[in-house]
Amino acid sequence: MALQRDSLRADSIVRKSGQLPGAILPGHRIVAFYGNIRSKGMGILGREPKDQMFRKFDKVLKEWQAADPTLPIQPALHSVTITAQGSAGDGKYRLMNSKSTIEETRAWAKEHNCILFMDVQVGLSDLKHELPKLAEYMKDPTIHLGIDPEFAMQTKGVRPGKKIGTYDAKDVNYAINFLARIVSENHLPPKILMVHRFTQGMVTNYKNIKLDPRVQVVMDMDGWGDPTLKKDSYKAYIEKQPVQYTGFKLFYEYDIKPRNSHLMTPKEVLSELNPKPLYIQYQ
Image (cartoon, rainbow, N blue to C red; front, side, top):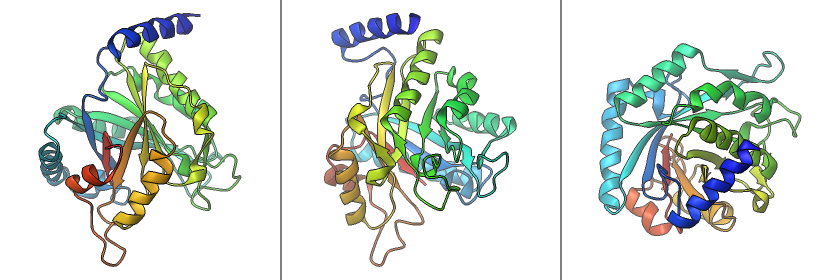
């Protein structure tokens, strides 16, 4: 019952002020570097030496602030913390980062005034078994959550990488409720839940996602390709199937692979996407 009472109180505050105290969105634009500090292949976070990467990050943050001076930039590191695997392990095809890797990533974030997203790829496991592993970390007000349907393979029955996985609204709702409980029990500002998406089937029954003022939900278009394809995917899966807030992913390596393609600039993203995304991720 405590969760229900807290939810009602939160709803009352939102009706009066529009959001709960300490909410990051919509008053900021989050710009994140994604990857894993132990891997050169997962993203810009980890691909380049630490100091070199942060010099690049500082430049990117300034570009985004210049592109839209009306919204302050909130820097973020987005770390893949539970990673889908090609080998079975205990049969679930996923592996959690070591405590030392997690703590080092947290230290990097704190050094550079970043919030931290811990991203989860469940493999053949599920959120009910994986998210509790992160509960203690989520008590930190600067740590938020990402979930990746691409590697959620339980309903597909194959190992990660063979097919694109999926989450239903009930899975997203489980993650929302998981975070909402932590917010209430620890008197925290709202958490952010970022959900990856680049196909129709990655998130089913989106209209059944139940929002909670203690959790701000970002649907992030994270497909790669030329600008036209990326914009079309954003329109089809993010704009036309709205949940709450929107995000957009840019790939340093993959977005430039198609012939005559290029990495979209902040000005392009803001002028050509509607609604303007409040979460930007670089891989």
